[in-house]
Structure formats: C-alpha cells, structure tokens
Image (cartoon, rainbow, N blue to C red):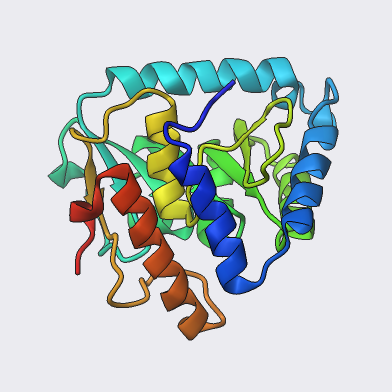
Length: 241
C-alpha cells in the first residue's frame, strides 16, 4: 500500500469538498468503479494493468524516484522546458504540463485526472507512466481514456489514485488536491524527501498555459487550495507568487 505521508493532506480533500460543495459519495463511486475495473487480471486486455502488473510498475517507479539525484516537478504555469538545460534530470509532470517538456523520454511519470487533452494522450502513446486519478467529476472521463490508451501500440503503465476516505485495493490516496500538489504528495508517499527536488511552473497568480480550464475563476480558487496543500507539505516556497 502507498500511504499518505501526512493525514493533513487527506483532511484537505474534505475541506475542498466542503468549499466547493462537492460530494464525497461521488468521489467514492469513482474510486470504487476504478478499483473494480482494475481488479481483473487483464483489464482492457492488458496484462500489465492487472493488480500484479501495476504493483511491479509502481515498484520500478519507486526505485527510480529513490535513485534519481535531480528530480524536477513541472506545473501548469511552466514555460517551455528544454531538457538539455537540465543535465541528468528526470521530470514529473502535472497533467497537460507534460507538453512543456521537449523530450518525452526524460519524463518519469505524469500525474493526471485526465484533462490534459492532447498532451496527456501524447505522453500515454509514448508509453510514459501515468498516475491516473479518480474523482467525482471524472468518472466517465478516466474510463474513456483507459479504453483509448489500451489500443495504443506503446500504451502507458499505470498507477491509480483516488480522493475517497475509503481504502480500495490497488488504488491509492496519497493526499492533495490538484495534479501539481498531488504529484508532490505522491513523491513523498513513496519516501522521497521534497527538500532536494525542484519545481517549475507552480503559480497562484495566473492560469498556466498547460492548464485545461473552462472556468478561470474556479481554477484560481483551486490554485489557492494547491498553495494550502503545499504549505502542509512544507514546500510553499516552491510557488512563484
């Protein structure tokens, strides 16, 4: 099991639900549906998406996270990134921010709730590991995405996350709220210290170029919760004010 590093990161999810008027039952349903679909031995016809296959993929990711000296987390407010400017670094991308990185082979994984559009699909088609998140508003979306990704020749390996208060076999709640701060929660849950990572493109003053949003005002509210999550993680200083 992948446990959250701090219970305060789970409590934050309840605070967010209350602030936006969202339903815990909806989060539960999405998480439960994800757990049920991926409890099969060949979900969507892919052996590596089975419980055993996902556990092996997560173990490989965890080992790489532990051994990588320079690890950079990229948020939606990032400028385009030329990986040659960051020798030896591996990147973790928050959803559509993967589109900011000019060499997909240097991306260790993408953390996403599924709205990264063509950038997320391009990463999936290149076989980049996806940490796919289930919540109440994306129950249909994550199902559509994995069905599509399963047809790719170079389909991604998967880790599954949720934001329910219940526990589900093979689907984890690392804490946090937005894709960006959830990436940091995920790293910390795997045992990586956040003191020696780098963050690019974490902003609360504007909507990033790689952020999918049809409601800018609501998105700005979400960024304030991202800031609170990062404060609880002790890494608020990574945010560009």
